Image (cartoon, rainbow, N blue to C red; front, side):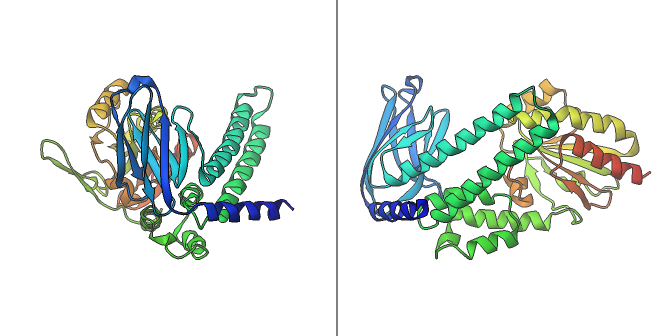
Length: 348
């Protein structure tokens, strides 16, 4: 019965989501008054409209041929929503969206996801539960979240919410898994730029997997000096490469782990290289000084290495062998230390 009701609701929703006039009201903090906000196409990044913030609010109005996933960019943040006909309310401070069929459906899904996130946090903060039981509970929450998001994707392949759900569930899939999912999608789904980027990411990740040779890249500094990964890798020594950014909390927390590894094995020929991605050079330099990072850095690499290696999140740490072969990637904390111990012990 629930499935039948949902199918009826979905059919009604899709009929309602045709092209027409829209009015988007965005509520925000008054502290960003007199700044300019933008509405962009979530997939292409093209600007659709702009507006000046006044009295903690701004609006967009116009016509849309068919629903599209859009994003609002404002000073200090961003908010995703579906641009479709009707009156849409967006409250950026809370991430709340309502007013039209697809946005209401997205908000319901967001509420369910938030409930699971709170459940996850409650498990983490419960000091009465031992770690082994916590892990079981974590896995249960993860399984329910994945099931929910996969069902949401399956039920929304024909509308813009399918794109957002696909990005959520498939960001770390390999090429074969992506192809199998995309084979079930409607015509044109593969043509989304974000989907194409995920396909390329998966291909690049496969090409730079453990056992493959490292892929070189070159970054030109403001002073014109060009630095390549090959300036450090494949030079007869073991090289730990840390892709990181100053604003990334997990990246900063991983620095002491890398320092411990470096101090333990530098006498055996282990070097470390930092590659600052998705960051402003001044912020990177400030973090290097604050964290007392002793190893060399490639600054302002931005998307170049992350695109090349299919890296979706940071920190991403890679160990390259003396001959340039990638020996490990994507490990952190104790797993990283254990892997380096294993490799360096075998190298004695």
